[in-house]
Amino acid sequence: MDKRVNSDPWDQVAQRLGTDLYLDLQPDPTATPRGRGARRRRTLAEALRAAIDDGRLPAGTALPPYRSLAADVGLARGTVATVYQELIAEGWLVARQGSGTRVADTAHRQARVGPSATARPAAPRHDFALGQPNPSLFPRADWIASTRRAITEAPDEAFGPGHPQGSARLRRSLAAYLARARGVRADPDHIVLTTSVMHALELLSRTVFGDSIAVESHGLPFHRQVIERGGTSTTPIPVDGGGAVIDALPGQASGVLLTPSHQFPTGVPLSPTRRTAVIDWARTGSRLIVEDDYDGELRYDREPIGALQALGPDVVIYTGSVSKSLSPAVRIAWLALPAQHVDTVVWAKGIREPDASIVDQLVLADLIDSGAYDRHIRRSRQHYRRRRDLLTARLADTGVGLPGIAAGLHAVIPVSADAEPEVFAEAARRGFALAPLSLFRHPDAPAGADVIGGIAVGFGTPTASTFAADVDALVALIVDHPYRR
Image (tube, rainbow, N blue to C red; front, side, top):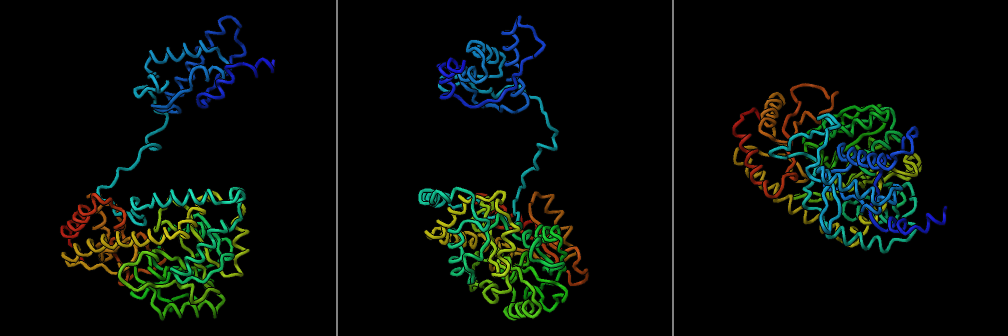
């Protein structure tokens, strides 16, 4: 029996032709032998109709050649050919010379899920969403070239289970790049690669954070939330024109999370005196500083502001990612840790990290080493600077000045805190995607006359073809809707 099956020429054909197709064709154990062929033909036809009807086989899906499917499911070739012809006649399938048999575009399907599972919100008319680089700037040609080199040059062991710290090659490349471009003082052995800054903070909350850390009164809510899910409470400190108010740091906090190069969302950098003060605060109390280098590379018309980590590599944990410089689709971030915390974080991270791609890490290392990453950053700065200049000039014509916009991908239009909800509601009615500053306010931040308000707009998001029109619409919103600044 085995010899006959293995020597069946159609079994060999099935191994060469077609694609895999799962169909449930279990026979009825209670059926009599009489009429078995008709039943099997009917079962195959019903299984194909069901797969098309419930969406498992969408319109345009290529089906295996009937000879291949016959060998796979153990039916006669004539039986499968007859079923194909039957479904073609009914309009479920189409057959064209040179393209095989496919699911017809007009095949009837019943909806199997409710609209809440499939409906998507309408696209905004004017997309100023925050935290997103312009996807058209992704360096496709450089990425392809680096992929080819990285895959060709990588040793075989690079494609096996990796070290929890991530690719050694990328850690070496990052250590050199961060030292050169951001002033970070980190040994490759002290760098731990993760998939995002949020994942990095989650790791820290489970390992080196104490019961409570301080955070800026305005910041990314999901960063604060992931810390609190790890069991660490957060205490807000005020932010003013000099960045986070270091004198307001609570004594019981085991550390502080800062965005010192470009505070999110206000955009101001931490002043030099406060930089020195927070390092002293950490050292005198055996505390930690976590530096999120938010938009640190995307500066426009100011002198580079180096990483705070350079002032205190023994007390500062430095974190960053490529989500703004390259794309949020590239899931690579990093932690540069003081030596005493490396082992703790690595073991908490675990051997197999979900969603981490060693291949992407190798490609990023090649981008950095080849200089392509630096060239991309410089091109991106020029692109975003032109957008920033147009936005600031158009708003200046209405008498609106934009603070904190010497770097980054967003601007905050000043609005008094009590007028902010009305302006945001009007923006939503006009089809804008943007954010009120209150969205980023810590729920425990004290209320009062000094509460800041504003509308945050991401000028990196709109497409090139609509950017000017989107800015005009934004200016019209400001002009048409008076508010107390």
